[in-house]
Length: 484
Image 1: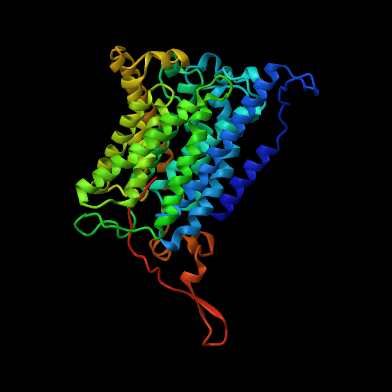
Image 2 (image 1 turned 60 degrees about the horizontal axis):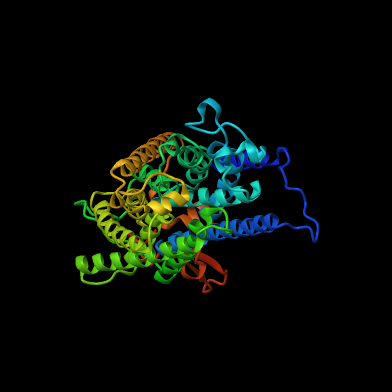
């Protein structure tokens, strides 16, 4: 298995070493000759690069979130997975994913792009991004950060029992093909874009896609040992560090200011402050919605649920942030928090073990957010973006709501079925799950040979004079849902 992982990494590095055609570059601007257009382009480019770095930093949020809601014996495997996914996803999207998403597909353009692999095309090759004038390198940096977020969502449901090789192989397929096809349908000139589907920053493309792949993998993987008793009743398996989990939520929250406002891919003349406002208001309302449900259901406020409420609301407003007024963003966020809580409880009861609540937060948040534009999109903002039609509450009828629903069914169904096929093939060949004894011991040692918290989980035997070490039992033997 280790040889296979090494072979996969080697192939990716060899692909990266292939020569590519030079980028088309703007004519250099000498000192004192910059025009207002040059300055505007420089400002736009700087904003897109900064936004890309904010989105990339969301990987730290996912890392802290997953670490916080994992048991101590598995935290090392979490951070190893995050780093590996960043590397593999970046190279796979560079090699093929970006071209599949944004290039002209000729006769296949309604389905997939077919040009510019290895980022070898010029600006004109990637017609799906022709609406923004920033350099191609900035476009790629921003879009690959989105692909990595979607990939990170996949693994929130599969923690603490998945083989590391599964992460690596699926990452190539997801970042290189599955995610790009959905992206092309909506953002790259594909068939859903011709219908006017509104998904400004990715409630469907990024979040629903990641959640549906996560659901497929989780169904085939099965729950963690000890998650359900002999009668099928769910048992709580608490994560080991709530402050780290909340830190992860806050990092993701801040990163979303690159995610949503950055999707303008310009700063000059763009409504980035308005989009930031709707994003922030929705997140706050999502916390309140989840707190309300937590208190109504259990008579206390669950911190993990509150964090999940913020994430669900941020996911929901991601589609609608450029189409709705601030008052509507509050409604969208609050309802997202309520829906998230309800679905998380339901998922737990029907036997789907989702340690981070990714299916409820990213899946249902993505569905609700995508539908919400068909309700709340204002005529003025629709005209400003040039996408779709006003929502039902503004006299737009059911047409836009119907387009949104069609996109959810098509994209969610496609990702689920293709991901299920890939995971089923992996299960039949290398297997998805670690051995039971390795799961009980923790993936840090069985998969990576080192503990994330060595002082806590390794006892040094000084009495025999040898300085030998022996593993000690994880003090936390239980587990379940947090925020994702």
